[in-house]
Length: 130
Image 1 (cartoon, rainbow, N blue to C red):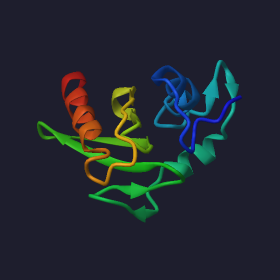
Image 2 (tube, rainbow, N blue to C red):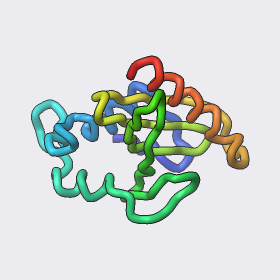
Image 3 (tube, rainbow, N blue to C red):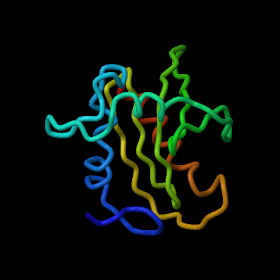
Image 4 (tube, helix red, strand yellow):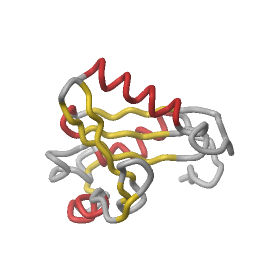
């Protein structure tokens, strides 16, 4: 299996398949499965998606995940995300049973130029789908 980190390029479909086990959930209690085979222990999935350290904005860090919430129209939507260089993003919004993959090419740009457009797109998509 090819790695998709450290500068490697991956299609949105590849990212969704590789990280899809996160969304197979019942508030993450049913997660960790791909094709009826458990590949990540549920306890690890729950622990890894908790916010342990402060990150940028009002986000938190889990185990390689960023955790945050989006406020739209008086509602709050909690999300977890894997974020890569250039604006690459994989978001999961558990309450909506929603995964969003954003492929971008703003590599090595300083923050916030790097990820701001991807986050704006995520906000719009959740607003439309919520």
